[in-house]
Every structure is written in structure tokens, then in C-alpha cells.
Length: 231
Image 1 (tube, rainbow, N blue to C red):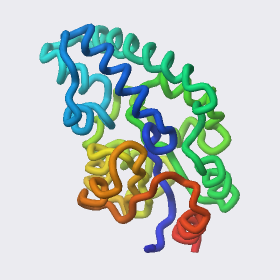
Image 2: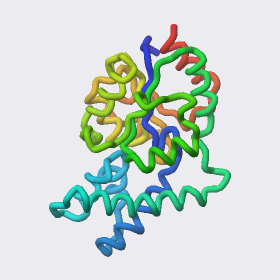
Image 3: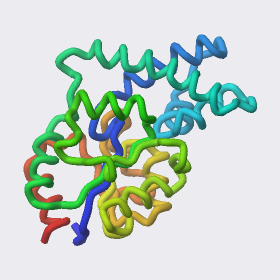
Image 4: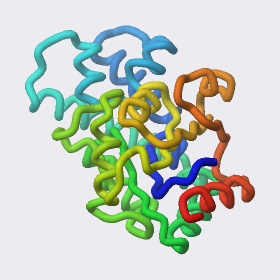
């Protein structure tokens, strides 16, 4: 592993394995809006990692106002959050994530979140997962409407800047093609893919990916990662 200085985490499908809940919510809402099903390729390339505004524009093919986008987005997210609350004991961060984040904080590693989630979902995550244990208002970068969505590089440039670094100084953890493309465009120093819903083989085939993991449980990986950003 090359020596770097910080870590940038995507959230959905990376720190929190919620792909099934997002897909079900979009299935229900798009069927309600358009009367059609969503294909696997549309989920992979047009939904996951994208902002709600971009997704809604893709499906509705119309000039939506900001107010209309907000109304549709919140209706979909209401469905999503209800599905999350039905997860019961599975409503937690990815396996090994708590341990890794605690280790990184104890080691003084600079880290930030770069998520396409909007404000309402981000507030939900802060409350459910006590994210202020590891991040703060400056280092939890979410879709507030001011940053172009992935695959544009802006969110990773912003997240790196929030911890005083360039993307080239940082490890990025991602789970979807659009996020990986964003990290590559930002010039990330290293990209780790999390196979929460896509296969190891597919993620390994994407340009820029240095390593693929299933979750954060592997103690050897956690140790190598910390050495990478502190050694």
C-alpha cells in the first residue's frame, strides 16, 4: 500500500449496507410515477451514487422545478426510511465499520464522508449511527444542492479539502461505478471498492480500483490501512 494521509468514505453501500432498501424505494416510487420497472443497468449506472435530482430528471424527462424535485425526493426518501426502520437488528453500520472508525480516530487519522444523500437522510444517519463520534459538520459532506453529483469529482475534492488535503493524499472507499468514476476524476490516491451489492469480479474490473473488500471485519486489512495513512 502506498503512503497516504487521509480517508474519504462514501456512505450508502459502503459504511451502511442499504442497497436493497434504496432499490425497493425507487422501484415503488418510479412505478407510481411512470408505471414501469427499473432495470439492473439503470440501478447500477443511473441510480446508485447519483443525486435524487439527477435520478428524477432521468426518469421524468421533464423540466422539473427545484420545488418539484424536493417534493418527489422526500416522498421517495420517506419510503426508504420506513424500509430502513424495518431492518431491525440489521440497522447498523457495515460489519467492522465501528471498529475501524474507532481505530482511525484513536490514531488521529483525518477522515471525511462524501455522500450523495440529501439532508433529511443524512440527519437520519447522524441520529441512528451517532456519526458525530467520528465526523463533524465540516467533514460530513452531503448533497446540499451546491455540489455537482457523482460521477463529477467535486464532492471528493470538497471532502478532501474539509480535512486539509488533496484527493491525491486520500484513500477513497466506494461501492458503485459512479462513485468510483468520481474518485478517479478527483485524482484519489487510492480507491478501495466495497462489494456490498456488486461482485468482487465486476468491481475489480473497474479502472482505478486498487483493492476490493467485502466489509471492514478483516483485522489484517484494518491494520494495513492504518499503517498506510499513519506510517
